[in-house]
Length: 77
Image (cartoon, rainbow, N blue to C red; front, side):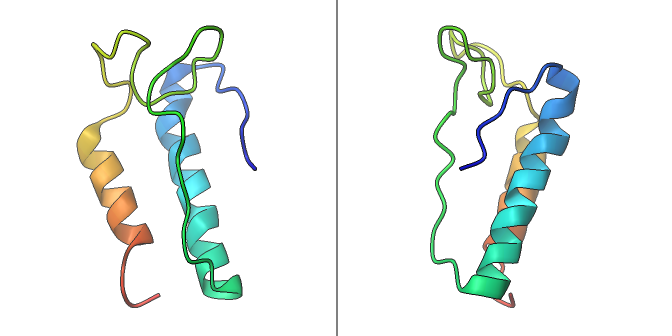
């Protein structure tokens, strides 16, 4: 639903957090039961993955992803 290009890799952490905050909001307001992040790696012309096309480099700090995902999964929502 929210696929869009991230023109600067430095923006990726902020955009990932914004997307996950939308998941939290939908969980609270509409009872969302699941969400899928489908682009773990860059593919061909799209560079919106969490890792490079060759899977050699994480483009976002994995500790940050863990923290953000933990907030999405928090049982107290």
